Each structure stands twice: as structure tokens, then as C-alpha cells.
Image (cartoon, rainbow, N blue to C red; front, side, top):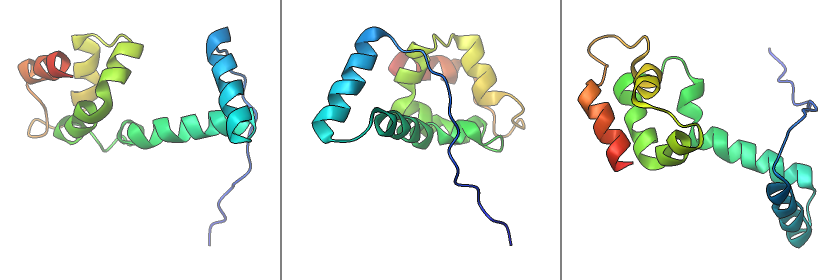
Length: 110
């Protein structure tokens, strides 16, 4: 039987002053700690983009994630066509790969 480790670990994080002020206002208004706000934000990010944490998810399997929420990911991290193709197709077998043109279409419509 494996015991899951639910302990928390401290991390250092740099935020823009405006973002930190919004975190503080949100925490105060909801009556929770700033850490709870940040933990929630991380959980939301990981649930939306969780498929990227799974190395078995690649090629066609990633298309729904990029269509549903990929615009924020692509814009925030300035993912160009080559980088997006590497993320999506990477080590995908040929039958799971997405055409380069289709990746370009995802970028245009997302």
C-alpha cells in the first residue's frame, strides 16, 4: 500500500505588483488566505492543461485542450508554430501526429 504525501512545500514566486494586489483583494473579499488563492490558481491551470503533464498525451489527443483553452497558453508563453508543433507532435507516432498545416490552423482559430 502506498501512502500519498499530502504535505505542502514552500515555493518562491515573482508576481507583478498589480497581480499581487489583485490576489490580496480577492483573498480579502472571499475571506481566505493569499496562499489559498494562489494554490487554487495553480490547480485550475493544472486541470486545464493537465494533458501536457502526461507524456502519453500527444498528437491528436492534445487538440481539444488547445482548442478549449490554448489561446491563453500560446499567447502568454509566446508559442510560435515550431514550438507548438514540437509540444503537440514531439514523440508522437506517425498515426497520431497532426499535420503542420493543421497546427497552423489551430493557431489562427485559437
